[in-house]
Image 1 (cartoon, chains in turn blue, brown):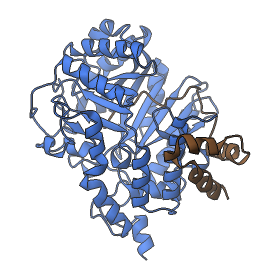
Image 2 (cartoon, helix red, strand yellow; image 1 turned 180 degrees about the vertical axis):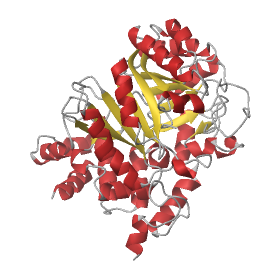
Image 3 (cartoon, each protein chain N blue to C red; image 1 turned 90 degrees about the vertical axis):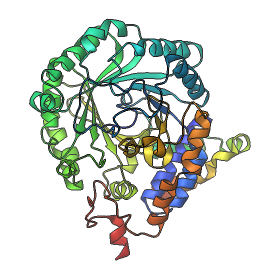
Image 4 (cartoon, each protein chain N blue to C red; image 1 turned 135 degrees about the vertical axis):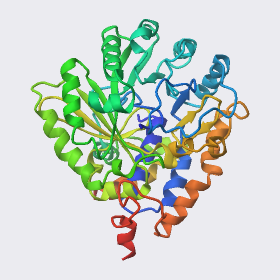
Length: 402
Length: 60
């Protein structure tokens, strides 16, 4: 017998398919998603300190608006989230390993998993600088995954971050992997117009050093991001269909290599375009335990390439970020604002997570503005990425107007 | 920049690769292996009949 949860997931798939095939409009899509919305993932900024000062950092504010949440406060937030069905907690920050606050929070999450929900997924996202010295503290911490951010080859990474940071991160990751700190250890990289030709070789090199899990995410076009980093749809096609599989297939045996390409669908027209042009293969679309939609292919050498379609911030509301001072954010663009709290759903100190999550659909002007514009098939006058990049010459909506 | 929850630990499935896709799900529905009526009675808010119709149209 199919379970209730599976029915909900089937409904989500059905909605996206019909939207992609233009059988329903965006208002129907959003209304349908409201019926089955579930909060599944929480990104926890456990501090607001970082040892790097990357120019492309998504945070647009210099200091927190409010007081940093204590470990005790995080514990009650975790309880609230679990009660509301959250399955994945990602410790992030600026840099979560810069101090030792992560220990208490991980300990609590572990206890919560043992007591209430054995299927909780617990992750930690780090720049890797402190990993080698903190790795022993992470043993038996119950991490499901460890995510180390690397920008690309050593010269690229060290220029972006700090001299020596590449080697420190890789050494830390390999040590963490060796000591079994997490079920999976990931190298996480951002794909953009300047590195997409190099990333496949970068994966090959790191795989030869023993790293087996890669998460590659399409760059998200915040206002801080330089235009020359933004992709065209054609470049994305070349990467997905040609360069990546061809390069990785040259490895003789890669049956333990897993690559997740996170296609961050920053605009709904792009999502529709991907369905129409078969970049999303509807015949083979799947959904995982935290409701991520994905396609996959197994290369001849055994490597698995997953294409995940992250729709989190647009309509579905399956992922939220809680800032170090408790503001609940639903998209990255809000984090770029100096007065980020004005773009939040509210603060977890004042309202429960279920009330905050409900606001995403009930009071969020952005979603309904988007729906209205899409229904009228007019240009949003915002760069639809990676389609028209603000030039409005590739968008499916424009084609329909003709 | 990655998704708001980082890498999310990859894809979370029980098996290394998923066993079922939509086509198989629809096939299961069409073959009547799922007792749809009982689901509607107990969990009506999910409108399972729409899934069957929508997916049926998609396959056709």
